[in-house]
Image (cartoon, rainbow, N blue to C red; front, top):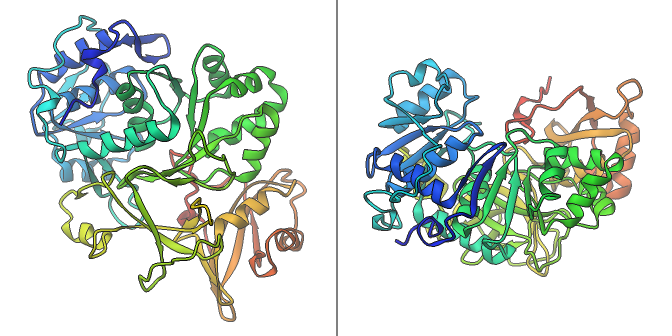
Length: 486
């Protein structure tokens, strides 16, 4: 297939490509550094990348792809047991790391190559150019979070990278003139594929903050960046900072596109940001196994609480528990999202059983996410089938809409909703709340009435727990399985 990054050989050589703090590379510099590294890598093999949020990580992944190999991004925060499992499962021939990085014991048996990101000569892209690679060849092996067992390695082909990034370019009018700012981890699809490989495929620029802060966002957007990618935790911090930071409001108001993903952005934060900046955040929906499935389009309605419409090339349907397709688009009927298209992974590494279970007989991927669909095709996700779909009193209830309602209460800072067994209702709704004022938390009856007035009586929480914090993972998602039900 054609090169994933045509700008490395055919774009303006001195255009900025990567910027990490004070360190940066032009396209000529990136071509030289990645090309020199690619010449040392095995074609068709697997190469681990110690994915710290630094320039070397981006250079390493580009080099692996240029060499026609598959990159295995490693989360630097992984425990030794999890890391050991990933290394045994993926069996990388090498590990790439920034000079001076101390690698944990599980990696010490893997041959190491330090990444020289300062080799700025515009050398050849690679002795075996990426155009020789087949569309179905593995590009990335990204490990899932492993909530129901050891992490599984999703094998993402080059075809999926290209089609997803080109579909997003269509939806977002993304061009080489765009400058993206973000502070996301680089071992995950959001930060690595969308946040680094996306700008490079367009021939644009990415500025990585290293560590996210509202002040860093304001600085970069006020200095010419046009797009911001973030997760809900980041946008929540932005929403909190806006009332006292006119420069931040100005920066966000001047951005071409604000995009949130990896989890649902609470409607309350949508509205606070829109009120302060005049700019609405748009959401998109994807998974490790599918890359991106849907998005609000740049020329579409940025409707809070929705993830837009299917991207070009993506088929999406909602199904009942028995597998029957839900034909209605009434904005109320909840079903599991299933998708198919060129954006999908090829399977789980070494797990044909799990791969087979993930797909229907006719090739649709079972996402495990529950949603409703509006008459105009907009998709609104209500939660995960395993943790966010609550069956109470004969109703199927999505936790997400109750969480949004709770967050509209002035006494609630954060909220999560789960279900627990109930002898009468089947399941009862449980709210886990971080109060705005720990000394005066809102009571269970007050919150139940608040939800019932906004949604419906059967959606009110029956039990309320007050917490100091909610457990979250590296991407800001609430880890509901960690919430005690004692």
